[in-house]
Image (tube, rainbow, N blue to C red; front, side, top):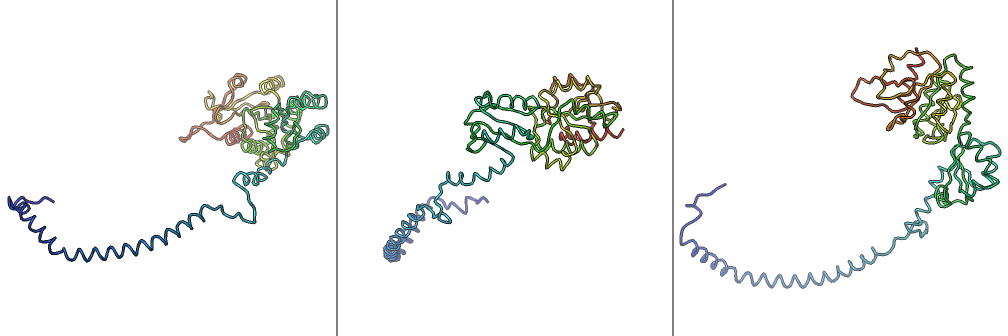
Length: 335
């Protein structure tokens, strides 16, 4: 809000008036200010005495704060020690693991269902383990040669003696047996081949859908794939007990073998030229499903007889791998 000059600026005498008014004000309050100063000095002395006591209390309280708190139950773990103490919670993930030379050797010679093996190069090339490990590798079991320190990390510092393995929750069969069984069960069998499905939840859901729609088997590669772990079995909800799974060393060679046995190879791709709704072939078939982010590899795409796409009507550009597989199996088995 603006004020006019007539009301606020009285002219040349304004400075004098200010001086006079100020001098009158200071003269009237001179005596009162002395009294106030005395009161302030006395109150300051009292406050300093009080401050000295509070400072002492603050010093005592700060010293108490700096003291280390007494741990519960009489334990004296530091932060590092507490992390070590909580480590066994992580070991629950190792329930399906076996380590140590003698334990692993017994598991191998008794033909236990194995998902993966880790060992040092010395163990792999030793006379005791070399032939056994080669045999399991040829059957699709993933074997990794790792350093001693890496194996210690994987087993949380256990006495592994250079070798450890993870058990599988289900048996796998050879590709030849899978082809024979599938042709005996159905005139037009459908086998699902997975390329790069590393998420165990996706693998379990695909197995569940494949068994529900009466597919004849699953083919998974040795590398770049989730194994038949406990998580897969849990997500599959019992379907893994009724659906044969073949784990192959090389997926592309397995596709060639399936083609030789009369299977039509069909791949799911968002760039497929043919819509799934327009595909009506009735023949022994292999449906290849790739990972969500990368899809089917280029080399595998070249081996496909058809690349199919699922026609989507909404704004969502892609589907989860297990959902896309379920939709495709439903269409292929219901026509």
